[in-house]
Image (cartoon, rainbow, N blue to C red; front, top):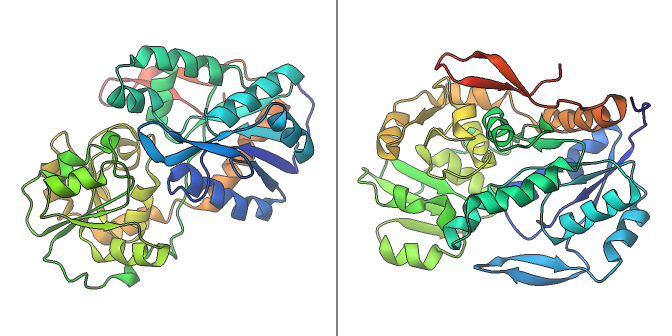
Length: 366
């Protein structure tokens, strides 16, 4: 049993950082704003100040090349009460090594289905990558995940210290009151996010749907998809204010990814009063299992048409149950658990069964 420890400063080690636009960067930005409300000072060890190189096959993402000893010096200078490793990139790997060397407890995040992403680009078996990730995360005190279904998957793959940490949304910035006219034929089916092969945007853009298809975002697959689907409207990157208006002014948000671990864009959509169409996979399945605000189907086209009929006000009401303050508070709870009790069995298999007869994973403390 560890003694209680006062947590006043948390060091976040993240390879994903501004100007990237993704869920990791958005979440870190929100923690920077919301943790101080709870008396916690967040500090960040990011690629800022280091030489960087472009991620192979994805030039828009740059990873740090820290010189020898630089990560250790940054960690020591931070004088943090706890270290949370957000990503498994060069900075995360070096920070983990330093924590293990010094015997310092740390927690990790599982944000991205990297084995699936890698295998979609290169002939690398998912099992190889999962083996490396399992070793990386199991060496910490807890691995934080955004959804129950992701926790189930990781426990089944041998991850031993899974803990829940959900996400939030700014329900004032994303609001139905911003609804207007985009000057396009309705209904408007919208996608927001990276334009990359792992997002399976082909599944969306190839659909025979009425109205208009709109894509907001950039990425390595943008030029190829624009050439293949000239009838779709590719709007590129948009500022937060423009993005909020586009969300609210659309009719259905289509989320064709099968490899995301959550999808903050799902919360932004429903906060804007926009119903969602998605596959029944990790993220959408956790948020829309009750059928409120989103339609799930292995046929994404059927889901898109069904979502047109769903209640937009009910979608908005669901979004109100997610907040960044709750997200920050949950993170603090997870960190304090590290210093208050042993984590002998962080994720338990519930011996009961759910309505579908599937074995459940319980991520709550016992």
